[in-house]
Length: 293
Image: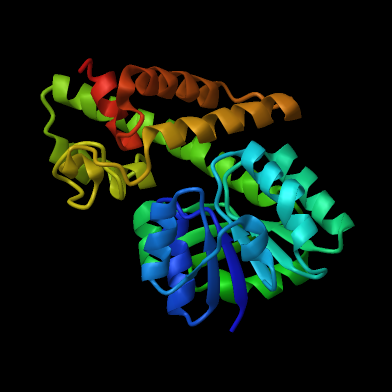
């Protein structure tokens, strides 16, 4: 079994680390939150007092951090210098492509392989071990990482070179953000036209309007019992996180000279929603704002 340093034990990282422990791996856990570390220890991880201690002796370092700045600080500030040559780095954070590629290059210069492996599937997928991993980096590193990723997820996709995992994540979530707004608008229009939500669902879910935002995460209560709409929009994936990903997509679009007008509009709408204090709600809750609530 592998010796793993897991850095970043939040709502996603904590359950992911727990699944590695469940698979009999030795996990040294570190987070700025002592409560998060204590929760990891309860699941069978060992507590590290700092990043360098967590990394010492590790064969693999996995990180789940809030933003590119944190990834750069953790790797370039401590991990690359503290890890043994040949250590595999797997960053599961969702960050900008440029930072991901820059840190991977710094790791390679130090004799380390690094993968960017952002995830999709929310907190439920993290707990259940059913996440989708979108992975960028060298083929050999991906082959080495795959058995570990399979303990935390069920869909593991190698997207190409360094940074391509991040590219896949932000493109996918731009699709999701835009489609959720479109589905929400359709249900609000249907209601005003006197069309029952279930009847619209029955039609759209089996015809050309079908999409994941409709059939798995329907933003109105009723048609999809497991959707957050039936839990007062308690978050599986927060609006704040959706806004973060949409802004990353816009940053990447500007850098690549790509035209993404619907992505830009989605970012503006989610910015309004989050700035109205709705950031902790599920991103599907934007239907309330679109409905004038």
